[in-house]
Image (cartoon, rainbow, N blue to C red; front, side, top):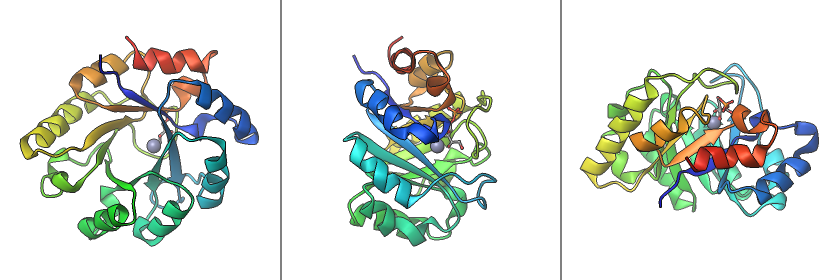
Length: 217
Ligand code: DX5
Ligand code: ZN
């Protein structure tokens, strides 16, 4: 039976002991690891960047899924490839020439994703959907982990699914923000392929069990 891919976001992990975090993630059933890169401009918060990702790359063979919450992300596409990112997602709201950015990400050998803020409609992706590997639907306003899930997300996931099916695109649908064991089943039923979670996993007494709770229901 198909299950969602789980992508723990290390934003809620203990940054003083990321080696321990990665030992846990390597034992877990999570297939991807979600890396939230923030610049203090596109979002209020600042997280981490290329040097940290480069060090973390030595700790796991799992898929590195970088979510860029930065202005002009096209400046750094090569740098993210060099530090070992596999899937690179930029925000729709940061782009003037989205096609050019997506083309470059794919040309240098990464999968290309586009993220939508909660107020950005799915329909804006109509003319580029065929070229995308991933649509990231934000279910909170980006910037912080631990925020409340926005209920309208189910509808947006269903719209993304419809758009993908109508266009014959192979894009996967990822949901990010406030994901927990309560909303995971309905998100998966609405068409989500990949579930990102930070606080639900890292604040859980048993993070390995938390990953399973999101994957099997
Ligand atoms: C928010 C980030 C998310 C965040 C999710 O801006 O993009 O990936 O870490 O955190 P939770 O799962 O706690 O909402
Ligand atoms: Zn994220």
